[in-house]
Image (cartoon, rainbow, N blue to C red; front, side, top):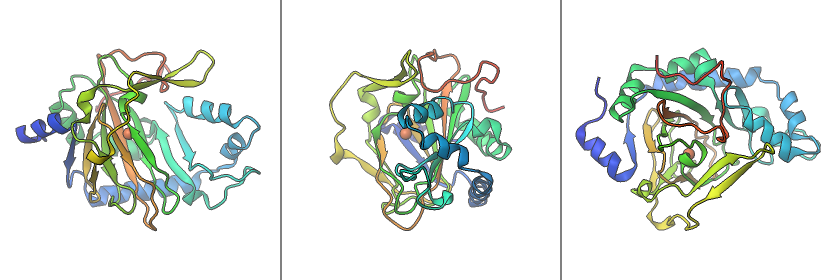
Length: 281
Ligand code: FE2
């Protein structure tokens, strides 16, 4: 099965992103959204509250994140908890995202993530041994969904050579009002600006190669309908503004790497050796 036309591949190589409308059916998007609602209903934030309300939030926060590569974890919006460690509003409206291995641990996410169409898309993009490294369900909550500043996914999922690609799927319509993605066309050609790595002390640090800021004026908004898939090159600068509207902007992202590339032990995302990342089958 071929997904991309030669023209689409040319545009992707030129721009570093590609918008594929109607890639996933509205029914499949709604089904995933409903499933996530049940996951949240079943989720007891007590244990996480404890993590976020200890005297050493920086460290415990960081550990919660650094050990989530092969787990299903709930991450909260900044300021979701007050100084007593209590949620300021309902848990449904406080969650920023779920990550990072639902595609392997949750049957509904597994089915959504391992379709013949996604496998064929990875094939069209040149993957020989694609590995589904990371999944995130992003809520971009009404009114409080925070800004995500310009970044390259290769900063966080570093391989040698660079091989990460993001599949960003709109589970709900993404508009200028609710914080759609913005991209810098062609920005993937100027190389990786920084890399995040684990320190021996169990923290993370950025190694910066290029301090030049991204040029804001050249950014283009990607307003898309539910079911649209946006392919994001691992070096493409992208961002999203805060959601100041009353509409949420749910999205599901999958990050692929090439299995033959080198994956450093210093990357933040590590999986248990007994539970390695898998491909589409
Ligand atoms: Fe990203």
